[in-house]
Length: 339
Image (cartoon, rainbow, N blue to C red; front, side):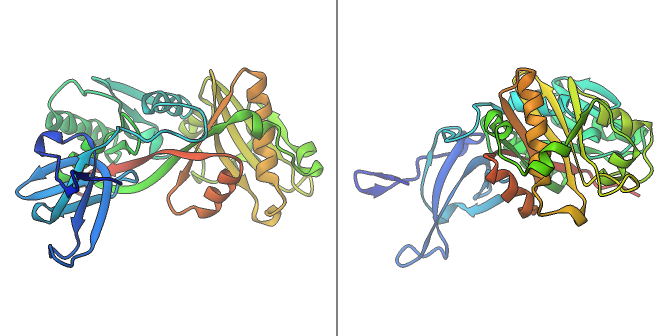
């Protein structure tokens, strides 16, 4: 990374650059003679009282004392992608939201409030894709009231790491006491190589696709205990929904593996890919995804997306081997309950 101008290090950013993507270099110990340098790249989210705050791609906030800066510059909004389908954040936010539709929703300017009886954070959080149409504090107060009326915690789903994501909003939420509970990455990849994937014959032949799911499928998914109608409505919702299952060893046994795919224009979203622990290491997850991919290709899709929670290294390795790469990270921020 090059900071020099005429052979000199220069700080070429100011508080006026808040909201822009920057690259900075600072001295770790403050010594300008023999100190060590650390470089940070992210969105400049604040510069107040001698402290610079930068939000990195993964949502981590880096606080830097202003007088330790030795260089800094504005950099392009997002690096060029080297693999996977081209997509901006706004497009993916809309597609992923349609694939997991809430039972109830309400617009707040360009924000969307979503509620589904508490079944998953995605279906019970605000999706902010633009201006809420009112001052932020007023919008956040409305959000808290709206979820309070439904006896649900107030969550906001905000993203970092791509052009058009919400690093500034993330910083403003944390400054107002909202706490990040969990983060996930959206990964994207080409659909055709997944559909063409060679899988063990036994797994490929057993994958069954259907427009609905049964109780055995739901037991392996195991996200909600005893499912209410709101669970069934969220799972069944979406533009073109397919459910996959691989039968177990006997008619009495539950499925060995399951999956869900939502086809939406050029996109196919993969969710709920689960393998029974007794049937792992047999390629069943790959077989399920390949079968769903072939169905999505038949409907005209060409690109794929899925989400991976932070810390799920097994899933990250599996999907990386299938050609998926991280596009952006989203975070669920919760407002602390008074109770």
